[in-house]
Length: 445
Figure 1 (cartoon, rainbow, N blue to C red):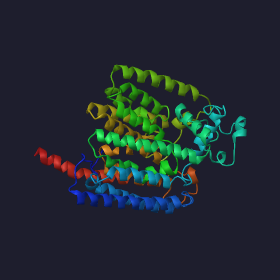
Figure 2 (cartoon, rainbow, N blue to C red):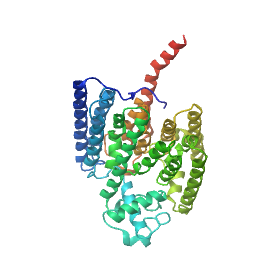
Figure 3 (cartoon, helix red, strand yellow):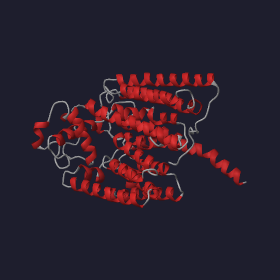
Figure 4 (cartoon, one colour):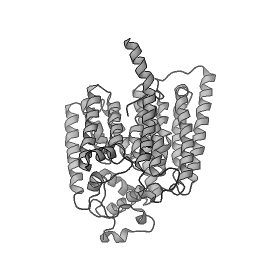
C-alpha cells in the first residue's frame, strides 16, 4: 500500500494575528477534551473483549474525532501552545487507560511472569511457564493469565531485563503499564524532536500521540512495543550527530524487539565506518546470544517464526498460492528486502526509508497484530497518508466484528473480514491516486 494523499504536515508557520491564534488554541483544546471524554468512556468498560461491540462503537467515535483533528491540524498546528496541548492530552489519555483491564490481549501477564522468573533466578528462555520447577512462583493473579504456558519466551534479553526491573519494583500489571507508558511518553518527546529536525510543526506528533489504536494497545493493553520504539527513534535522531550512539541505540532496540532490524540498511547508509563496525559487532553478538538462549524444543521464538499466524492477508494469499508456509516466508522476506533496496536506491531520507520497511513488514507478515501498527504510525507524521491512518482504524476488527468472539483471545478473523480490514484502506489509496495520476498526465502533456 503505497503512500497516498492524506493530511500533509507543513513547516511551522504563523496562522495569523493573536485572535486567530487564540481561536486555534480553543479549538484544539476542545478537540482534545472531546477525545479525552471518549477515551474515558472506553476505559470505563469493565471487559473490552466481552463488551467488544461497545468498545468498537466508542473506538469508532474516538477515531472520527481523531480524524477531524488531523483534518484541522494544518490550521491548528501553529496555534498558541499547540504542542503543550498535544502533549497534555497524550498524557491524560494514557493515564485514563491505566486502570483498564487488559482483556483484548494477555501478553502483559507474560511480561509480569517472565520478569518474576528472571528476578528469582530462573531462565525464561529455557523454562516454560508450566515447568514444575517454577511452581513456587505461581500466583492467582498473574500465572492464570499467562499465554502459551508450554513455550519459553520469545523476547530478547533487554526486554526481559526490563520485565525483571519492574518485577523488582512492583510485580503487578499496573507497574508494567506504567513502564510502557513512561517509554511511550519519552517516545512522543523524541517524535517532537524528530519533527522539528525535519522542519515539520511538532504539533503533528498528535498523529501518533492521539491515535485511538495506539492508546488502546499501549496504554490499555500494555504492549511493550514503545520500550523498543523509543530506541529506534533515538537511533534515527543520533544517526548524523552521534553515529556511534545511534548504532548502540539501534542495538538496544533490537535486543528488546527484533523489528528495528529493518531500519538497519537505511541507518547503515547514514553511518560512517566506525559506527558501522560497532553496529555489526554489537548486533552480531546480541543476536548470536539471543539465538543461543532460545535454542531447544520449547523455544517460543522458533514457534513464532515457523508457525504463528494472526490477522494476515497477503501472507495467507502467498501461502495458498505456493502451498507452503516456508515458501511464503521466503517471498515475504524478499518483498521486504526489495522495498528496502528500492527506497535506498531512490535516495529516501533515513526515517522515511525505515517507515517504508516497517509498513511493508506489517502488510506481508504472517503475524499482523494491531499493536504492530504503532511501529509505522510513530513515523507517519513525517508524511501523513490517509490510507495508512485508516488502517489503524480498521485494525480493531482483528479482535472481532461488533460481537465478542466465542473463541475469546484465540479468535482469528476470517479471510473475508481481513479483506475488508486491509481492503478499505487500499481502496481509499486507489481513489486518492486517481487525481494524482491525472495531474502527472497533465504535466506531461
